Length: 245
Ligand code: HEM
Ligand code: HEM
Image (tube, rainbow, N blue to C red; front, side):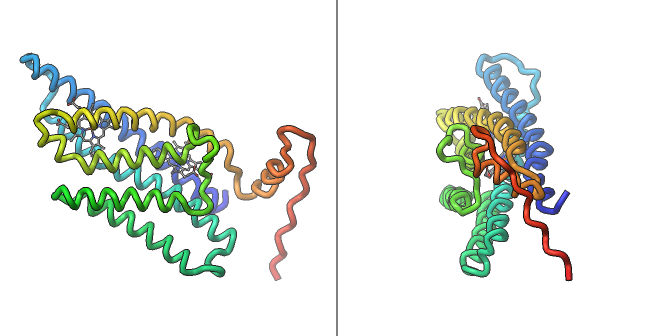
């Protein structure tokens, strides 16, 4: 397998090996937190240990980092693949430097959000991280599938990542709010996020079927160009690679 194919696999491997197992534990602890709180409200003695809340939050923080990381890995692959293929650096080096800076700034903003305490700074860093993801997502080379946005791995992936960033930014509000308003907002938004993650499992696996290996790319492109799914067509041999001198 070529280096390019291995780099493509980095994103799905991280999603399957890190994000989804983490998500399972976070959701399990979330259900326990809720059950424990409801039992306490009814005055019942709960068998669920009081540490489940802490575990949910600690692993939830890791989950936010992992989801944003996994989304950035996929975006980086698509964007830099396009830069190399179309020799963008030779034409507009400033654009490439700016894109590199955006990746660094997004990671720095997320790191700052992890440590920020004040409401203002949490809002600022959450907004900057979200903006970074969205702007990077608008770059050339990303397969957005805008005409079928409701099935798009890109749109639901970015939305899920934004919801994780929001969950991290409102973390202290959930505890401080005596009316449970933030807690209920958190439950609704993150139930949607959970559905989006399940969708990512489906659309991501579908993407793996659609993306050709590096050596197959020129042939597969011909299949799309000639619309071989609807009419007979002939696939030409790819031009031979130049012999080393
Ligand atoms: C898909 C992922 C997630 C789901 C489905 C989820 C769902 C829930 C649920 C059902 C509760 C219990 C609410 C109740 O007491 O009735 C909860 C509590 C909470 N969640 Fe999440 N959550 C997720 C991710 C996160 C993340 C990423 C964070 C922050 C980093 C977070 C922070 C919190 C906090 C601070 C609480 C309150 C815990 C406590 O009362 O001790 N959650 N979540
Ligand atoms: C945590 C959940 C996930 C998130 C947030 C996520 C997010 C993203 C994003 C933002 C992209 C770039 C846009 C695109 O090219 O479509 C992408 C690409 C991709 N994802 Fe995911 N993804 C997730 C899970 C998965 C899973 C589970 C798989 C496969 C098992 C997968 C396979 C792929 C593939 C193959 C691509 C590249 C498509 C291309 O370059 O054309 N993803 N993902």
